[in-house]
Length: 482
Image: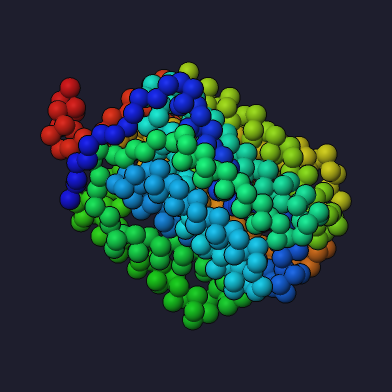
């Protein structure tokens, strides 16, 4: 059932629009930061709580799994009940969960707190993008704003290891969670003062069966990747997991195809541009998280770097992502998504290929060059992928559009962490370099995927159509006839 709501979206001044963008970027910075900041602290967390590699992988993926599983429904809730309202609820949950993680005394408590962080973060990521899209009615201004948004999100993912390393060296691993609390408090105040309430004029009924099945699919796929080395890839529990994943995926596709208002419309993936954007988002975040996790274990265990030194080694990645993301946004506004996507794929592939021969004595400048290439690829990728995905859906459903892209990102992050964990689980420090080589091949392959996605993207300049409410069947028919 589709419900029509009155429009309550005010026309904002230019200064207010960019202030709203800044507030959303602050919150999104935390979401991205907490996806990667824990990576550099994994050895310290493992030592402090007495857990091994697979437990450490759950510490990272408990956050990304819940985040990926709930993003789409959170976007739909925001469209229905108010984006600012859901955004503030997400901030409060995220802050409370950060406090619980900082106080955790066991791996179970830490994983549970990280999962709760994921619940809060799911109310921030798609809603922030929806708020930004609806605050920017002009297509060119909106493309630039999304470029800034993607830049901040990419930067937060990239600087996580640097920030985490500095905090851990100075204050211990719990500080990576304490730091969120005051930032959340500031974000709550700024949201109340500057962000206007908005909602979609036409909203859809929640798809609870689809939501439940999506959580099962994501959880089982990533869970079996994490636990595979421990339980055995051909053990009875693993075989049951494979069967569950296949059955849940088939049930999800069947349910979504039959519902009038599905969580994810299967027909959307028949559009090459939209399907390519989703695939590209998965590939980018697989590559980023494989890079960060393999970098953490290699530098700290094999090379003996401190957490701060290991994090600082990724500075070229962070700087490149920061510089290239706004450039990519401007390129998208001028010439469309294809050129920045080709650049992203080329640099990402080059970064992975630089490290396929990694050993215990690889020169640090060579490592820095590889991380620079990976960061450049990440920076050029996010803006065109986000713009392409948003333009692939009715603009009035910006919350759901952003949620699908963010779900793909977080699923990619979870898969990347799981795959990297599989490669290094139980490997001695002297063997980490050789064990990680398939991971760098995977990073290069993700770059190739982006180049293929670029071919499916629209080369037109008008990437983002003007914001408007969702169209009903009659309006869509009339639009097609025009």
